[in-house]
Length: 172
Image 1 (cartoon, rainbow, N blue to C red):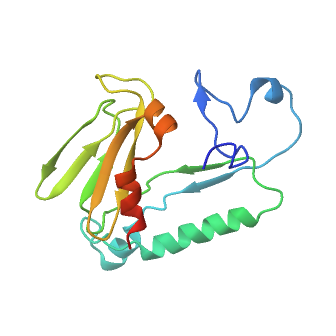
Image 2: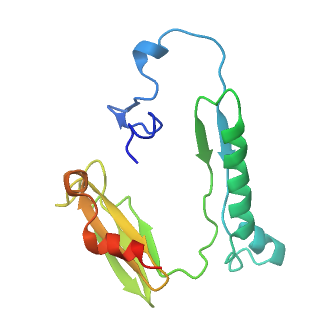
């Protein structure tokens, strides 16, 4: 979904400023508003805590997923809508049966495999510290496998996702 299709829901920061709150509109106080702050969905912690094994027991996320969905539904019902939503704290406590870990922060593409676990490092949207282009990684998950491909921002904008990845999403 493009920003236009989303009705201006998605915004981009530039020059260390988020365009959702332009200075010319925010310069003067216009009255009270509210925002929502959520914290620590920490998928996996509830089972780990209940079994007393916080180092190893976080392999089920069901409770946290239901609660996070409930939070989103509650926020979406609010009138008037909050000005914005910020999520802080831990997002994940443990990974249930994972085949790949995706990360960033290295500002270049990298990765490797250890004991059948793929580590995939995606380069930055912003500042590049290697030779990769500014971009995003598309990850397709099927019942059988995980397929991922890094696209430059220009390539993804101009050509979209390649047919072989789109075909994987059509299969059930």
